[in-house]
Image 1 (tube, rainbow, N blue to C red):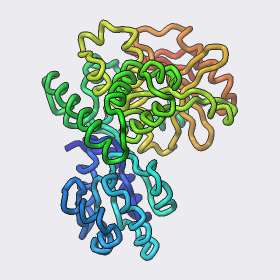
Image 2: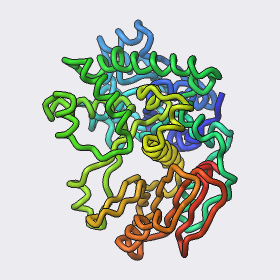
Image 3: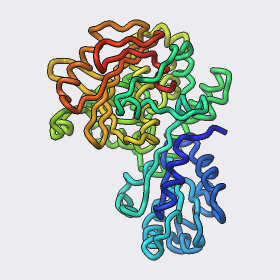
Image 4: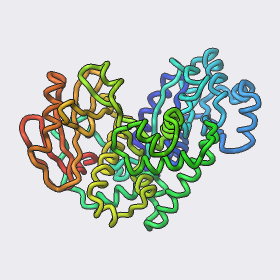
Length: 408
């Protein structure tokens, strides 16, 4: 079993918050994590709504179901299957606000569903568990994000030689455990099929499941690109309103993640196009039909996949970062771009550029320089992550580093 870097944060939250909810993709390890947390607490009970009997009871009488759970910590797994439990939990917590009463998990973001979005506002802490990070796979907790925001140089790294394998493998524990590529591919195929049939029905009514599948396949080939609703809708032959609803569903199922644009004027961020990334590169490459050898030959596509990989690793580290930054991307009117931008609550800015090559040229840092100029005094530093070995400074606060610096 892998030690999850998010576990201490969940344990801390249970010490002062009545309800803690762990959400994230199915098969990311949520059940294993909450059971590990529960094992350290006396008298914790566990119920999963994947079992038919408790599911029927929860749906038939949510208030009675919650009342019968007792007064100690209760773990309720897969809460999205019975979202009407959330108002009942709210009422119970309002009567008894002791910390650590409920530990919930959800494979869909139930807080996006009607009627439950505000049920537990002020009573609940939310934690997102993504697939395994590269540090978790190596049994250590990464600090790349916090080092950059503290203006510390990135940790030294040698340059990973197995990046392609890491991209194809992804981070789902079940996929990681399978040594043979064809067996991992079988997992990804079954995983996507299950999500688009069983899990979709739990949270939405879809009139055209085939269109949802086509959208997911198209998103895989365009991961790391700007989101253009009109162009995507035309390509798929869907109304824009339907496309937006389907994209929101893929987000709710933690298959796709949107990264908003950064601008010095916060009002402008809302009108600029986000980028979209598939959450896991193993799923992405399975949908695109590419194995390790084919990916090495598709150098243009490799750049997009590598960017999605780095976006995913940064997103995972945000879960245990002390600085709690938000992830953005940057594109100026002059055409300068930075793949990923971190901005924390103090307004400090860090830029991360991703290059699918072993060498970095001074021109590769033009986007970071433009971002630094726009950020002004909020700028901390910028990093280019590449596929080569060794780190090189390109001036104050600008460094090119091997990609394994992320998890060094």
